[in-house]
Length: 234
Image (cartoon, rainbow, N blue to C red; front, top):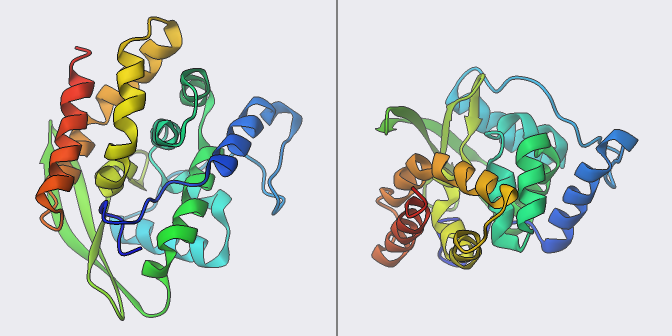
């Protein structure tokens, strides 16, 4: 495992984690809770700034408080990311409609297990400017561990600054999402339409991911291939 740019690290949680999160979503009204006793419903605004969002994320990951990451993640994106971990079309559509905070918690738990060392020890978290795609402003935050190279987390405004999973981890997600999106394109149902519409909304985020200069040409091309596939819908 090296980084989260598609070179050996997947930020995706295990299928067991995501399946449990989706099950909790179905049982949310019954008060389902995870092993740590945290409820699945996370509310609240994002952070005051991009750097604050990443700092809060780091604190939550270090404390193992994955439920609190729900308010730091763009709503609906964790549900879409679960396509890369074999979630069904119906599960993803339900999470988009009813809330995906539990899935976001599982995403970050998987991240902590697979690439969480990027946040361990002495870490510098710094603003790295902004970029714009399709009229949406994205905020770049550099994360530099004491013994490693800088990597980037991307946020944007959504009732406060929140982590954009697809702008931050698009290269790692793209390769795993090609096949599920192909299946979506061949599926005619209300659930499929819901998921495909949500995927179109993350195209600007994927374009930001593809423009990351730290990516290899192959990794960048995978992201652009996913964009091409998603935009066939329109």
